Length: 251
Length: 256
Image 1 (tube, helix red, strand yellow):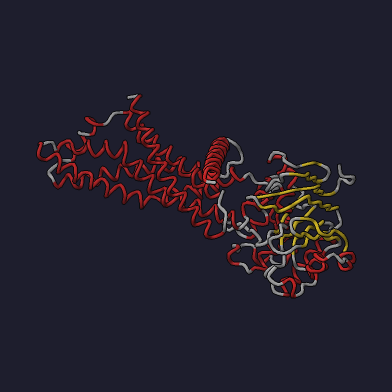
Image 2 (cartoon, rainbow over the protein chains, first blue to last red):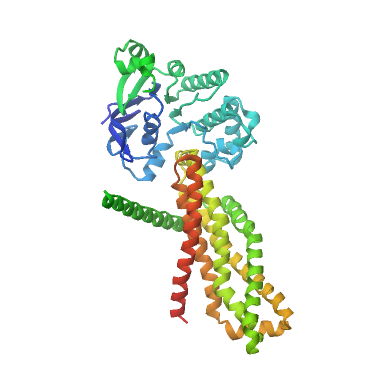
């Protein structure tokens, strides 16, 4: 059992799909207040880790805990309860096409049905103001730019006041100003007491927003530690990821 | 090598079948559970039901007309053209009305449902909904199922009515009066035939929706995968409608 209950923990998790091994004996600890980034090349299985924690897919081996409760292979109802503590900013935003920005942001609150509509609308406006897209309240996702979609996705993640926020490649495909906006938002979230888990291959964003790092290489955890440890690490796989050379070409 | 491939295909088929029945059962049970998602139901009823009126109208009209034309050619040598109304009615109400309207709806609605849900899968919207605490079956499948279970019998009734009108337009050209056309209905149609004409589209509507939803929710492989899933849903639901039609007809014959 985890010693600290306020954390998300993966122990020796293994996951295969279609005869292909995605994760082997993977360990992860996400403690409250300690922001972490999972690094790895594209297709290395980083997003799979988020989906495993969320129970969207299930591991073939190993155990997963959320705040001390083992959720591995639990019924969907248990996952649904645990997911209330977590929000996700998906890679493409994953905003619901058929709903306006306001309906997207207030989605979870409308679903829960605990708050009156006026109160939900006030929360939605507050979150949209926080990410700087309040004017887009009545627009549909198709009318937004890529950067705006990600900011709306962050507002949606914030609306339910989760403990943990997962970011899946939050800066991919954004211009430098868009990246700066997202990094600033992540820092403001962390200042507001949210714990973030990000998967990315963007080192600058990772170093700007996280204290702990995990590096995934060929389905295994190749490194775990702080920024200083990562930069000082002399493992060949880690060096290759941080400073690719001609030897990495077409690998 | 070949045997193991057959094994895998068979396992995949039975896994798909099991998944289909599991999703269908859950969707049916959720019809009677909160939340009801009235707005989603209304949107789906409009899209799936009202949106199919024109194709069902045209299908009924021209099928009724061609049926009457062909029957009249056959009946004329026997001086039995007065039976034309009943023959068109029994053919359309029991069989062609429900089957043809369902096939049209399978093509139009089945592909649309699969493409919509498939796109939601590949753009991670379904994952986002699950993370937000939504029961996917209750939110995405059940409103569509409810809409189709209500809309499909209504569409079949409209198709039947329009086809009888189309039949009369042709029969009138052969000197059949409206009274003669209508009075022959009672000679051919019995209460169980009306029941057959209503239960079939109800069942077909459910099957079309569930096949489309199940196929859509199991889409993979990006835009190409969505296209392939939509095609698979239309083919599968059309063939299923024809197969189930036979078995339903056989079953109803037992109770005649």
